[in-house]
Image (cartoon, rainbow, N blue to C red):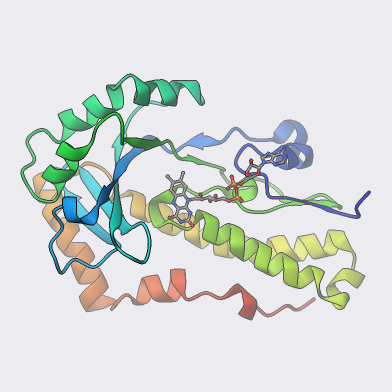
Length: 263
Ligand SMILES: Cc1cc2nc3c(=O)[nH]c(=O)nc-3n(C[C@H](O)[C@H](O)[C@H](O)COP(=O)(O)OP(=O)(O)OC[C@H]3O[C@@H](n4cnc5c(N)ncnc54)[C@H](O)[C@@H]3O)c2cc1C
């Protein structure tokens, strides 16, 4: 029998259930499904000078486009459509397999002529359509007992609006591994070590959740005027006011290996 258990068992975590017992939460549906597909870059009608990843704003929603690998030969695009929650796995599979999801997407974008969105719409079929329904784990009272600790989605699944879910799981593990490798930290006992881990990680996770909630605002339908404000607002935010500073400083330049351990 091991001394401790670290549960990295995802959004429907059994380890979390062990920790929270009857107080365990039900993951919260984020309110939208993501739809997209993989295309050859040559067939995607992207401007030649477009660097990836890129966001494209339309009145009906925001598109994320990213390269599938370093060769840049294949790209994936994804957008989201607000829709009621379906039954856990079966309901979402059925929505895709029946062609209803494709129909909903085509209906939403039927009048759009702007490229490359038009090409994306025309290229989407029931054979290549990918569908995900994001769920979140809302803040829970604790991430650990004396000997069991959860990390990653099990503790704090975040909707993918800022693409930080796995990043947070890696950061959790980075800090926990450093603590477990520290004789001083281990000497204080596992309950104190887990407590320190949770207290250190919570503020960082909270700030990512806040950034994700903020990004949610830019994701969905906006109508023509709001769409223009949103596109230019994002451009100005990144290029004039912040030069990417908010994103670089607050989101991406954090290094968990530089986090000072004081226990
Ligand atoms: C549409 C979408 C887009 C995303 N985009 C991004 C992105 O761009 N960037 C980013 O950083 N994150 C992104 N994420 C989030 C990311 O996928 C998750 O945050 C990440 O996978 C969480 O990792 P995890 O190891 O905590 O959980 P999981 O990846 O869910 O892994 C849990 C593992 O535990 C296993 N398991 C479960 N129960 C048990 C058990 N009882 N015994 C043994 N094994 C068990 C499961 O089989 C699974 O392999 C996205 C998520 C979605 C849905």
